[in-house]
Length: 623
Image (cartoon, rainbow, N blue to C red; front, side, top):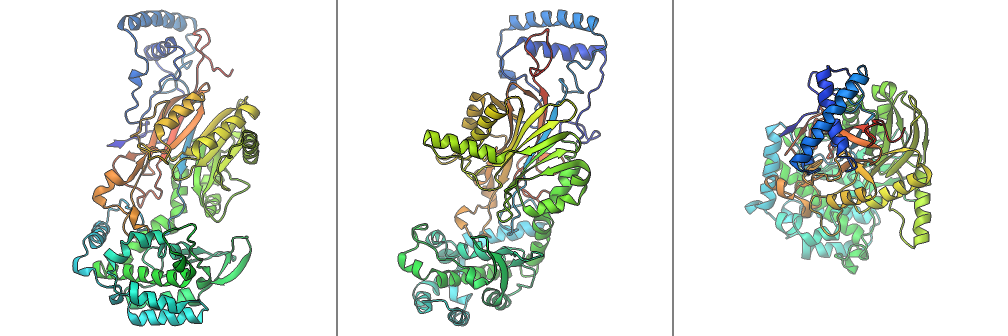
């Protein structure tokens, strides 16, 4: 199923303009609106929701047939009176094909931090070599057969001895104990069933921890450089055509390469890669024994080397002539040119939106966007004072040029007020890191309407979403009661949540109970997904890996992205999703794709001011 943008292909994605209609068209539109008004105070006036799968608005206002007929008669009489009395007021309720005139349009998009591993998630790739390679990798790992050779057949004893010599020269302690464990625990393990797929080894983080620190390093010198470990699972540039070539490059990288980095205290200094490894604590990872913790630096160095060697070996067995070319192409689209493509989408497909809420934005995006029409021509870009340039998970807000003035960040005030309320109540404040939440005041130039705008991305399980929305809501009620509120977010809500996840239905019940609504209405369809991704076997956390054939059942396919507002202010004219960058959402397609470099779809909504209930006052409740 392909969900098209509500406008025709001829119109493109321009916001609909208010247009005059023939009197018969006006009568039809007015009839619909009179019926909606007659249904009076039942919350939201139903709007067209193109792109929303299964929002059952027809059942939102059950009524008897006799009531319907009476309503049509009354509505017709009122329409005749209004057309006679106000013949020139053709746009009183209409704006193009969607009824009430648009007041505002907004986009929300979790752009997703740049992924250094192009193979981590299943992607939609038209190159048949990609699908064949990834299927072969799944088969290799799930049914290795005679390919499940001992570790020592891949990471050879000679390599291990060279590693021990290098670790000793580097000043690593307890190398002799690692030698003992190599002989008794590691060299005879099968590379797949007893190493790659060993769940206990995974819980000890002996392979994933060194990958976390050394996979891809953005240096702190000027200009910043990107330094990559020689491995399959990043965008390493040089030749890894054999295990032997990999080993020489890996030794040099770990023990000789020096980079300028910022430590946890924020101090900048030069450091060799070997000195970036940290002990793995039993207190945090109980699977690792106290004895292993004591030697965890040389032990994880060895396990990291074995892990990388196995990946190179597997790729050279399965696709020796094509895997590196495939990876280079994917890195160009998903990594090196990600900022270019995301800017391109925002400045073309969504250039006519009034507001763009962005989440998980890399700091480098700001510079990339600043030189492009997105910022030079279409939008003013606003970002948090406390932007986090290391985590690359910042929330931004882009406002159409010339549309807003008096833009003032109030994020710190929101956080402070929430902390004070939490202390008074003896509770924890909303969990936030720098850059997660961005809140501003703004005033619209044309009518002096005042707004409070917020952009936020939640934690993986969505448990911070309600506390953070509560913090913004409470601040808006106390300090901005005269302002319209619009809040674009990655809520990280789930169709079928586990005990430690935020469900989408409870989230919707909560926001409606707090007199808010969303772009997907008061009862969003739990199957109206805005994410669909699944991890492959080419990443360190194999417990999260999924076969391609299992993606529909086990993949992360959930409704996570919302624009929330006060229910008294707006009705939804239309809402669409997009996972192509062209205003189209293709259901059942995993993403990112090479054309759409994010694992979250874009949500676009058009809002109209909510009309007064009184038929004699078909105006905004605000004015």
